[in-house]
Amino acid sequence: MRRDGADVGWSLVVPLKPLVRAKSRLSRAAGEEFRPRLALAFALDTVTAALACENVRDVAVVTDDRLAAERLAALGARIVPDTPARGLNAALAHGAGVVRARRPGAPVAALNADLPALRPAELELVLHSASQFPRAFLADAADIGTTLLTATSGRELEPAFGGASRARHLASGAREITGPKAPSVRRDVDTGEDLLAALALGVGPHTALQAPRLVAGAAAPEGSKRLPPPQVTASGA
Image 1 (tube, rainbow, N blue to C red):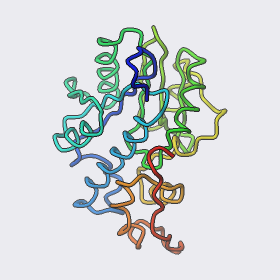
Image 2 (cartoon, rainbow, N blue to C red; image 1 turned 60 degrees about the vertical axis):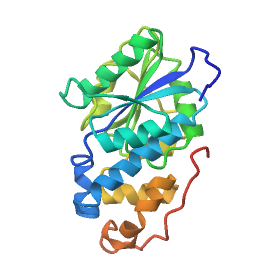
Image 3 (cartoon, one colour; image 1 turned 90 degrees about the vertical axis):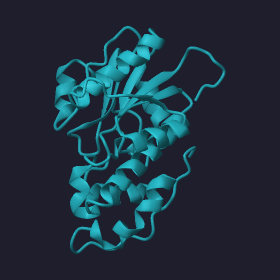
């Protein structure tokens, strides 16, 4: 992340639901009591890695969750209250507007909060590719959803996240990023199986601290081999 005061670099907008409602599809694997802690761990690892990315200037997290706001602000993120309270895409548009109220020419990117295996170097490659187009996006590992949407200076973000968002972002005229090999930027986590895939890539320290009980059995599909303890990937890796 640039720290010399220059008005350059990407501003990332990361949306996060109140933890009591976040990552509901993980309930079966994690249980209702443990799921919010896992959602927070994902967000902490995502933001830590994003802030360590060389071409990221700052990260704005749109959330109304008090605990998440405190923990993420301590990492260096800017907390933006979700004043629209009209869902994911409204929150992202609001966050982008807040960023550009301070930096009118900022290139802006929406980034999922559930990327616990995120590598700064891979994010840097994706953002570099995105900078070549007015609007661009990266599909998730399933090629159905979206994990990153970008808009360069002077262009609106126009987020259309949720469900089959890859098709909607393509239809909106955004260019799909396919060049750089960046599995950690595509590996979002919605299910127990997704979490096992992220653990296989190597996750950040917050997720690694929470994940062992899932690796021990609950998240693993029937008949699959039990994974070893999760590998921790340093934020700056």
